Image 1 (cartoon, helix red, strand yellow):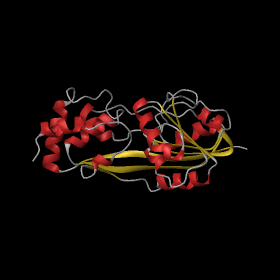
Image 2: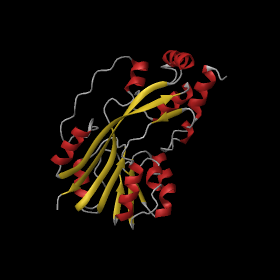
Image 3: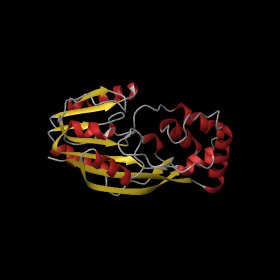
Image 4: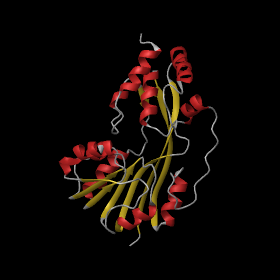
Length: 259
């Protein structure tokens, strides 16, 4: 059986670039939302004329669609991910642009009939509205407020409940209701808004360490040295009781631009 130090070293050694989570197989699991974002994305992309994926990561999800529109673009703020996205999306001749998450989108107005995003950090609803064509669609799966809060609080202690953001700010929408209000304030008509809590299980401390290095907003500023004592306690918990359980918050938003 691997020791605590061995598992921590393993979790620290895995590269964090891109959004490929295949390394977690057998070590951590996450329930998937009932709406099936990948299938919805494939269907919409197959019918689109021009598509944009905001904050694409390494382009892994977008690259999974069987048919891409004739015009396809993606944005990404982190240069290592942008390079991975260019490789993953080269089969579609997609344009991948490095742009900060809160910046204006570097495309002319009414460029796309489909704008998508999976787990955007922030959403510039005004920019989504601007680059969409009339009757165009925004489809995205967002991370909800308090996602994986159980893990955050195990390491950091009790956390204050987040206050809902005001409309049209560049901070994450915390719930489907908040996102829907922001989208409508920007001139979009919301046609679908759903939210679910999804069970996650961490089966060893290596998975926890890698997850916290990869998903950096769960424990801001995470390092193994800073949290070694709490990680050791969590390791003992998993050895005694089995998987550590947390819940990911996800919501789906679909909206259209008024003609």
